[in-house]
Image (cartoon, rainbow, N blue to C red; front, side, top):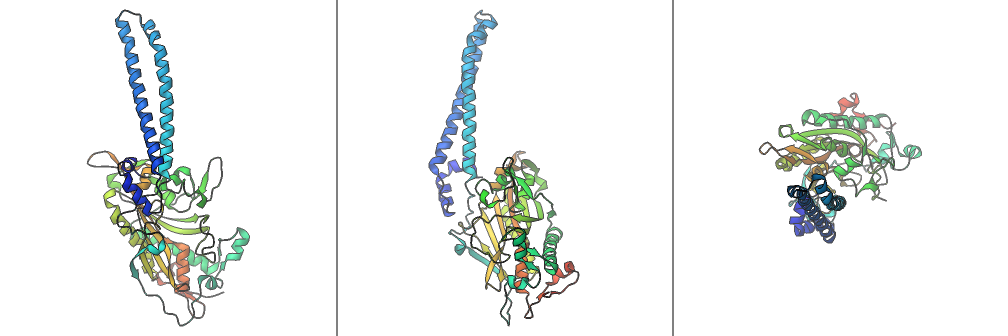
Length: 429
C-alpha cells in the first residue's frame, strides 16, 4: 500500500506515475475521503477540548461553594451530550479511515524511475542473453508430444479433476522431483537461503498483506465462505507473511527464505492462452525466493536475487534472456521486476520461467513488517523482494525440449543426474 502522506503531498506525480501503469487514480474520491477523515478528526479534537472545559467547570462550581454532587449534576447533561457526539465522531472517523484504507489497497505500487514506460510485454526491455539455442538436425517436438512417451497424462488428469491439470508418471515424475530438489538445495547451500516449509492454505489477512486481495480474488481458489481460506497462488504469500506484524532487529536482516510449494491459480484472465500442455496450469510447483531487507539495500538485493534464479538456468545450460518489465506489464505490488525467459525450441521463442520483483515498502506497509533503526531506535518499514527460483513445471518443459534427441529420447542435464539415481537419459516407454 502506498504511503498516505506521500500520496497527499505528491498527488500529481502519483497520478502521472500510476497512469504509466495503465491505472487511473481517482483523485476526487481520494480527496473526498481524505478531507472527510480530516474533518472527523478535527471534530473529535474539538469535542474532546469541549469535554475538558466542561469537566473543569465542576471544580469551578465547587470553588464557588456548591456541593460536589450538585456541581456534577449541573454539568452532567452537557458531558452526556459531548460523550454521545464524540462517540459518533470516533465511529465516523474509523469508518472513513477504513474506506480510505480500502481505496489505497486497490492502488498498485509506484514504478521505479528505471522502469521503461509501456503498455504490455511488447514494451519490455531486454537486458541480456545467456547461452546458445540448440541446433537440431531434425524437427524438434514440443513438450506435449515428447511427454506422451514419458508419462505426461493430461487426459487422465482431466478425468480426475478437469482441464489444466496433469498426471506425471515414471521417469518424468522423477525428473520433475529432481528439478525441485536441485533448485532448493542450490538456493539453500550455495546462496544462503533458509529453507522454510509453509502452509498451502492462507486466510484473507495474508493475501491482503502481499497484495492479492482485494483486487485479484477471482484468480484465487477460495475454500469456504463463512471464514474464508484460500489455496496459495504462490509461496510468496505465506513466506513473506512470516514477518507480518513484527519488528526485526537490524542485525537480523537480510532474511532470505526459499520454499518449495504447489501453487494454485484459477487463471481467470487467461482464457484461450496456453491451453495445450504444461505451460499454464491450475496447479503447479515453484521454488520461491523471498528476501526481507532494509530499504537502502533493496536495489542491490533485487540484482542478487535475480542472479540466484539465473544460476539455476546456467547450471542446467538452458538458454535464456533477462527482461526489465515495462510499467504496464509489472505485477500489482512490484516497483521493479526482471523476468527470466527460457528458450523453447518448439515455439522458437523465449517464455517466462521466473519473475523477480522488488516491492520496496509496499507489502511491508500492508503487513506492518518493520525493522528497528539502530540510530534512532524507531521502527521503520522493511523492503520485501520475491522471485521464482524457478517454476518447476516450466523448467521441466524447457529441459524436455532443449535436451531432446532425434530418436525421441531426452538427455538428463548433468547436474540433475545425481538426483535421478545416475540416469543419463529418458527413453520413451
